[in-house]
Image: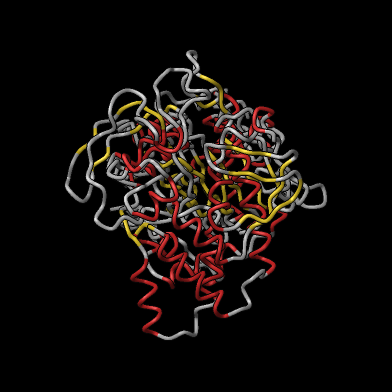
Length: 592
């Protein structure tokens, strides 16, 4: 079960407004034993052109591992591991349309939903802290299963020999909604990305899967979607609040229910592997043709999984625009069809396991304007042998840091007003000895145990630097980035004084309703030493004991991965949700 953070309840919020008082549903952040949602994609060949000679054929026509047979695991009794990230909004709209159909139908829809555990790893990241207004970012992992464990899926996906094979998560997207709901980021990871998969324990039969290194799509075979969630947390450092998953049949039925989705290609395209055949220009794909679009790999770009991810982003953007405009959703029968299709197609975590919870999620997501939705692909590079891809070190780190720190990928975040504007007097920090500081150890991650005694060591060091009210709090924590938080705006200068002494960058000083006073959480990015990595701390008296402005006391910005321009790197190949001109490049070998 997903554990909540101890000691961080309403009692610590003081007079700050709660999320519910601001219209947010705190239930969405209950990281309980389940979750749902995800994209739907099909089995395709592994690396570009299968350069490693593994023989993994398209659409499941061959073995699908990268280093031996997939872990043996019986398919779940309810074979509904489904949910395509794009349909989060579809799900919300379908719920809006079923609000008055009665209690029995409500229970019927609830019974359609598949459910599974949220995180199967040994170490779970704590939920993101709320901002100063009590609002939390929301992270949903959207998965597309290539399951063929039903006749409908076999008919659509082919390869009957794979009917009993545990499914792979061939589409994976993280949906990040900002704390203030002003923007949304969607980040895809190519299915052939080789990553460290942490140890996972299957809740159904207690089978333990040892930690390994493999393609990220195989994580689904190691106990279910909860292992894919654990893998994402280990890779990105982003805490995942929910997951959603969908399969082939779910894609087809949902595409039909919304009346089709407009797409565009720059040339006539035919992909015999997926079955897609379209003329140059704009078309509306529905039903099985929508599935063909989402599965097509050889027909787009250079014929690799990278081009397919771009096509999925284009499809998602178009669908979101349709849903926000109410396309095909005014007819009650259409709404009923969509409600049935979506709930039958979804497998979710237990925190989203009812129509009411999906309704609340939909209302939350509707706040985001399409112009502030950005879809991107994890910056990647080929491995030395070319048989798989891997995260591109600096650019991928930068992208993941932006998600963790709730920075919009489009670079359009409003710049925070600084309290030291010439027209206003700057806040000043009191003497260091008058600043209470709570220090917490958050160095544990999905793949690393916490560093013992870390909070006590840094609290003791702060005492030697004059912060004599610094104390260690032994409450368990787990987060990637070191953060210095403060409860009220008049404590910002105090927090900056602490950050300066430690060399913590000013961008990691945050206003939060989850704390009472200045709180330092030592993240997994700082496992040793008394100076924040990549910075030079100031252990002098300025910025605290001499009354100088606390705003001048931000640490060096050398540490961490957040970009100076606060925009996703070019290698992320971003697409804006309002872009109606986007059109797919066609692989010259697949033009007809």
